[in-house]
Image (cartoon, rainbow, N blue to C red; front, side):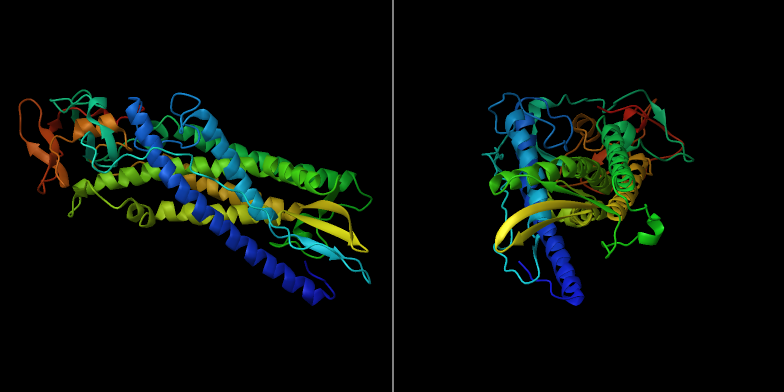
Length: 429
């Protein structure tokens, strides 16, 4: 609660609120991503036990194990999705302004809300499980799930074209990537529609003339913003339930969209790890998963984008409580046009970057896998703690490329190798 006695106090309070909200969104991201990391491992183990694990990385909340009562089933995954939305909505609503009418005391205090995201007994595989196979990107793979090809061929013979050394892009290789990219652009369109609706109501629902957006533009809401305000009925818990429902409905698509974007960065991380097999240091089959996350620029970028975009969402509206003579009279939600458009622009940039990432084709003769486990099993013919991939044998009629525990020469550009459909433009799903 704060008494705003002067314009300087209002500005100082505004800066303090925004700093606190940004920090809170960062904390929420850190906590939810930590829980999500454990959730991802347990889901991978559950899918492997059901012989349904095809990719090392899956959409955590939208991929379920069999059985509604399963800890990784549809029911608890749905609860996790709702709690994820509530967590970010709570961060946006945690700090509110209590306006005190001149000459009158106000009652009440800061509005604090807590949203928990428990880990519902997720099953985590034992590190000493004898049935686990070490591979490039998955340490939780049952041997029985894969059909090993002794000829190490995943398609017809192919010749390496020196002028076109690139594998399949993630857009074509993974069946869910295109849906995620389309969904991200759908969120941009939906939020642009929200901004247009607010502008329409502002123009036709008030007696004030709609000002030019360029004249009123600012990153933070200024003293005379283009905005609409509506009051919420009810008092006490009923009023805050309405506030949460209002914010969750609007913020939910943003939260779920950013969650789905994790799949893109994770399969790119898996692909980058697999391509270490042609590097000087080779591919280590046992790595620290946290290190692979914090050393990947795409993972770090998404980790920063999540709290920042949710913070920008919080800038697009404000909730105020007005008390007269110590009695709470009303609560109102104000939506700011310029800040909603700012959020749309940021989301459009985010969607553009992830579209380019999904369409990028990795360079080099090494077949792309994107964490597809059967493809990895076909390409890896020798397992070792550190592996290299390259040319192994000159055979008739086709040469052979594979893995080894020592550095291998590069593949020969003028030779035809035993086939790999991984590098084709078809999905490897």
